[in-house]
Image 1 (tube, rainbow, N blue to C red):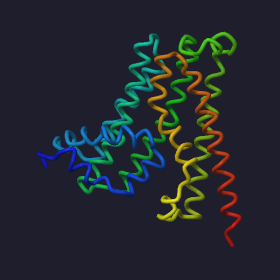
Image 2 (cartoon, helix red, strand yellow; image 1 turned 90 degrees about the vertical axis):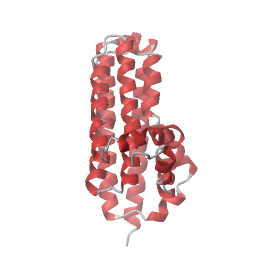
Image 3 (cartoon, one colour; image 1 turned 135 degrees about the vertical axis):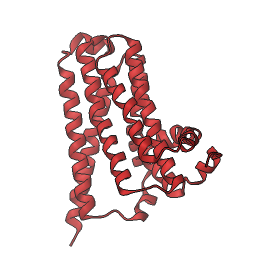
Image 4 (cartoon, rainbow, N blue to C red; image 1 turned 180 degrees about the vertical axis):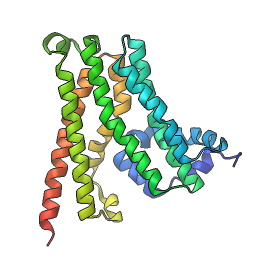
Length: 243
């Protein structure tokens, strides 16, 4: 185990997981997953379990939330965005560790999903707090014409639609379990649409660097509303088709 290499880690990256990354996590598929193969051996050599890596990832994640929300300089805000991206890498390292060590479990899947939910909920709120406290991180249009108080409402609406989407997805998933073969027939337009969500962390870093975090927030509000409506209409159609 002490001699584990990135090539051995990659061997456990099965076709089903590759397909899942391609369909749902395009940024990871193109960049983060390949990078994670080189980082994973270090955690394995240290004897860390997959759940331990998941819990370690909480540190940069919440550090990112705090640094972003209370940043009073571009350097601190950029550091916060970098912390978020570090967590995103660790979020794929823990899966590599689990597959290599054969540690995949229901609890591990729940823990990973729970922390991922925290990411989707608290990240827009952190950005909204940043914009509310300091309009210099917004584009010129927003800084001049929009009230700083609007951003918490925008982030709250985004989080609301995210939670509604997650609830519907889980409830419909119980009533109509997804077949394994369904993953092989995801159309290209859905792959592209899912990619928007997977680029959330790197886009945030760019938005902070170029002081357009307001545009980042608007983009993901629109994305989440469309995603919710699409899932809602599809779910209604599928449920009505059941006899």
